[in-house]
Length: 250
Ligand SMILES: Nc1ncnc2c1ncn2[C@@H]1O[C@H](COP(=O)(O)OP(=O)(O)OP(=O)(O)O)[C@@H](O)[C@H]1O
Ligand SMILES: [Mg+2]
Image 1 (cartoon, helix red, strand yellow):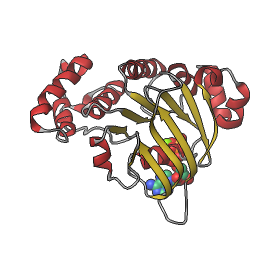
Image 2: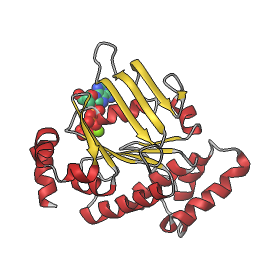
Image 3: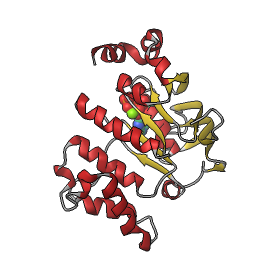
Image 4: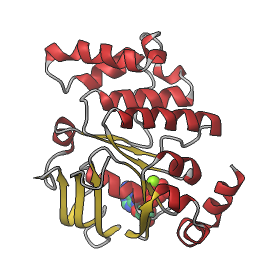
């Protein structure tokens, strides 16, 4: 990743929310360059999930634009965005717990032309040997970390240019969080631009290139992740005491 890399995803003056008269994202210019690993931080209720859901096409845009590369996708339905290489892993309900690993991947692969589906699932089994070793295992019986890996594998079915994840670490132990983040870093290394919404500030800053801090629906701060990690004022001002304490404790 270099500074000269092109924006692969961006929003301009984006205003979005669930109801017309109640904007949650209140004018956000968010740019992600090709190959970057960006972490999106901020206090509870800041609008992080709303921003990424809007980018994924799941929340109404009031004004402003969303660009994928040079293409204006503001009005594009969410399933079309996936087809265009924008993959989103929501925080909850990102797998079908009652179905097997294989069925979960098959459903995700339905978006591909028929002749590509099996090859792609095979490639994902190679990438995630834990899944490949037991395709008929029920997803609901997997550990928390393995479930997140299945959710990520489902998102990677389309070989996305951008992978957006909303708090994949929620509910996981610190050891498993670091395993999940290491896998995300490895996926990013293969060229998949990554946007990670996180509450695990310290662990996220350790894997990301750049951090963007959202407060009350606006970008309050952004910078190089490693520098932000060492900035106690930023932690206190923007991330809240809970997060500052957490990053000291872990
Ligand atoms: N489906 C919804 N309908 C209406 N309002 C919502 C909905 N989801 C979230 N909100 C509101 O939008 C605001 C921002 O919520 P959002 O979930 O985007 O924050 P967040 O930064 O992701 O918070 P957290 O760290 O808790 O996940 C909150 O005031 C929340 O109540
Ligand atoms: Mg959220």
